Length: 78
Image (cartoon, rainbow, N blue to C red; front, side, top):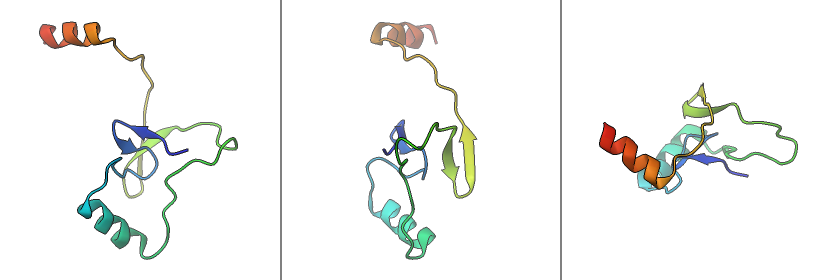
C-alpha cells in the first residue's frame, strides 16, 4: 500500500503526481537504488509519521474530516 496524505507519499515525501523535477530528485537521491515508498501488508501495524525531507520524519495526528458545510463555515469565520 502506498499511503498518501494531502497528495504527498507519507513514506518518501514524493508528490502523488510527479513531474520532471521529482523524477530527477528521485534519481539523484537514490543513486541507482530503488527507494521503498510503500508498506507491505499485513506486517506493517501502523504508520507513525510523514517523511518531510531526507532523514526527517514528522509525527502526524489523525483528525476527523470536516463536511463541506463545516469547511465553508470555517472559511467564512476566518
